[in-house]
Length: 329
Image (cartoon, rainbow, N blue to C red):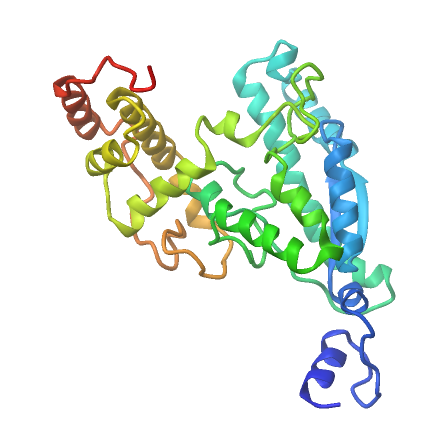
């Protein structure tokens, strides 16, 4: 008995005058947590299995569904309206078609998540509705590697201000502290993938289960994004000052390589900055969070070419004695 027991009954919607308490964390999880794997023909069995095993480990009410019918319905409406049917790049389409096909899958997951949040309590014979939790991290927001109004859009994002590196370390720590949650280590060590393009069996890896990986899509690693984020926010660096600092930090790279990475980051950061104006509220856990609405008041409209700054970087690279020398040679 006590406040904790009473809170458990209240949260799990049990009779607060009873003596009921959950016998295991999983029993309480089944009352509170609802998880859904929303797959398509582009999803891998590996990721589906991990989602199911994670749901079992935490005791959530878990569903595995496919949303291909929804995707097909939206595309048929588009075809009726325009007379055109988009195709993936690997199937003869353009990049614009490819991105649109990826984005419609991502956005329908948000719609499905809110549908489940409203109706799963009814399905389970309960009243009320659920809060939808988002799953985008701070580095994805910083790079803009997310679809606006996809599963990053929710009522609350517990990991929205945590970096990918810290998330991985947290999962590995928990998997060691709680051996029954060994699936966390598997998730942490798996190459991140959006699974929105058709699987290419020739390039898919056993670890990822898919041929599309985040870092290949972004053109930069999550570790590099950590550097960019801390320098941009904590050190208040623009393109030129960031280049100067990374020229020292990344001394294993040539100046031209460092310049290329800095330019790529600032291009995509400024191109996708508008996405941060609608970002889901997150627990503030990182000093370089890109959340502009609450603790980052930078503008969200930029000149993506950064004409003056990039020109200064080019001049600095040209003046450097190791401009054309790869220091790895």
